[in-house]
Amino acid sequence: MSAKYIFVTGGVVSSLGKGLAAASIGCLLESRGLKVNLMKFDPYLNVDPGTMSPFQHGEVFVTDDGAETDLDLGHYERFTHAHLSRENNLTTGRIYEQIILKERRGDYLGKTVQVIPHVTNEIKNAMRKVASNGADVTIVEIGGTVGDIESLPFLEAIRQMRQELGRENTCFVHVTLVPWIAAAQELKTKPTQHSVKELLSIGIQADILLCRTDRYLSREMKSKIAAFCNVEERAVVTAKDVGSIYECPLVFAEEGVDALVLKYLHMEASEPDLTAWKEIVRRAYHPADVVSIGIVGKYVEYEDSYKSLKEALVHGALAHNLKLNVTWIEAEGLESNPADPSARAYEQQLAGFDGILVPGGFGKRGIEGMLNAIRYARENKVPYFGICLGMQTACIEFARNVCGLRQANSSEFDPAAEHRIIYKLRELLGVEEMGGTMRLGAWDCVLEPGSLAEKAYGKTEISERHRHRYEFNREYEALLTGGGLRLTGTTPDSTYVEIVELPDHPFFLGCQFHPEFKSKPLEPHPLFRDFVAASYRNRQQRKAGAESTQAEAHRA
Ligand code: GLN
Image (cartoon, rainbow, N blue to C red; front, side):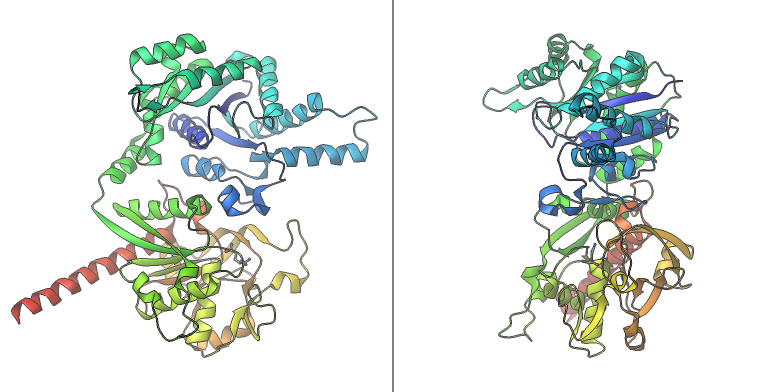
């Protein structure tokens, strides 16, 4: 059987949820027993998003092989079992980098190197490479919006793919917008018509239209769009806004998207089994209670910078049938007043959270605020989860406030620090690699029996993904463990410290890796699951405590 492709494009405006749409289609096909793979092309010129600011681009999603990729790949992994790598996310910058390398090497044998065919060939080869990994269907998302100059070579490449592979092997899905115009009290189809026409002008006839809208499209509306856009009426799909993103596959299933895709691709598959997804969505809409987590970070005003983190917390909450209430706290706002360092004004801001989390981040800004938050969690026995930077700051806080090492710091924040609890070990080891000296991608880790981590994972050997430069400095190990900190996870050769924990605390754990990248709604990450559980216990205990105080006051 020749390879089958679904191409997902977007029109009218950005942020219509193309990535989620691609992931949801993947999920549906998997639920029918098919093997899927997904990839994304990004039209910008950066070679990868690794160097882009989280404010510009949102989270950088890291794959096992250490690729720094677009956050849509996070959706792909959360909704399917596809194994993604650097081959699954390519930018214009990367494609050109490859071409220029070949050109300099003389691979083009004196030919003029052009967008067509050289760039388009490079794009097509990248798709074929991903498709050759044994998937029944490869879903290819084209970033950007139809009509952008930047995305033209990608659209031309997928046009050629249909030409070469035939209609029965390619399916074009276009995600578009059907806005509700309040003044007219009407849904408007014109933007969709224009977008489909724009696509047609470059030779692509959409097969399926996923119409983003806030309400169901009527039969008449669908038939009008179908007529103007040259698609079957049942291929006009209401992609209605949902309260939980995990409902998307169910909405698509109800609209028959999977059956239609199979029909267009001339494929047969078993009936979908969506039982587990339905249960997750049921929990999302009918939680038994809530749990509130305060996230103290640097990029909090732009939620996309912590996409996987937020989802991993949601998964942790769903595991206990809880609704997650997240409060994003700007770390800078928790800093002490230099005029009166003993005043702990920040405590008021932190009181009331069931759990506190400090996520990953780079640079010095906000660090003192994070240290205050960690101190508060440690002293008040509020469950604490520190991820990457949140582990490093937990070690610094402990060294300063428990071990009395006032000058403890990371060489990232103060290169001249007297006590570099956190430092750049890789540089000292002379490790040189792409992207500077980052430790990227999957690393094995051995857990200490009896630790919180080992209890969570239920095993002693794990693998997790990294993205950082600095490490725990083992020269300070004796001092910190003497003060009570436990090092409960290290790389098998024990070069790197991967997890720290505090005993005599309901849950205090910092990890050097990013567990959020491996959490899925149906397979919540054990650390998030247990952190949420500890936070919820804290909530219930505080509630019980408050009730008994009230009862006592009543009696008195
Ligand atoms: N800035 C820290 C480092 O580079 C932490 C990075 C992170 O949190 N991802 O080591």
